Image (cartoon, rainbow, N blue to C red; front, side, top):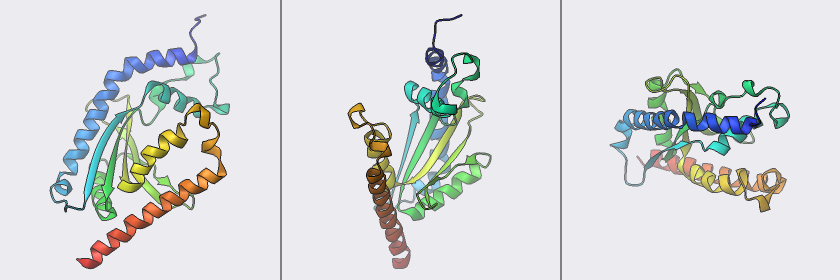
Length: 209
């Protein structure tokens, strides 16, 4: 029996897949920029659309797979049951948009081009949609690696970049911050305030025009 742990086997799988994952991320970003080009060419000076691709890091992918298991642990007797290819987001693209009027426009354009992709919206605590998220394959470059793209209000997305390292993946000295009821409340308040500002600005633009 091999002395390699499941984590070791998954690391080996990750690095064998890495070139393919990078191709998927590049392909998805290219396609999204292409399909959004009509909007990108007509932005007003106060409007922004930022397209960012990313490849899921090795340890992050392993932990994500582990969280999906019963009890959040791998069964060492069943190493054949685990593969990073079951993750829906080894490659990803985030589209940050301000104001929300343009978000709806770009989401509509991409829905036409990625009609087969499965929606998986990010919801707030009361069931409202914070961001639009979709999973699928870039079949031109890979039939194995699944990818996701997110369409996110710019201010909320920038806050998430801070929150991701501060709360979602915190320093070991901050253990417990992600489950703190007070920090969860404050996070929700920030997201709500930023969403209301973006929605209010969008409404003002429509009324002014």
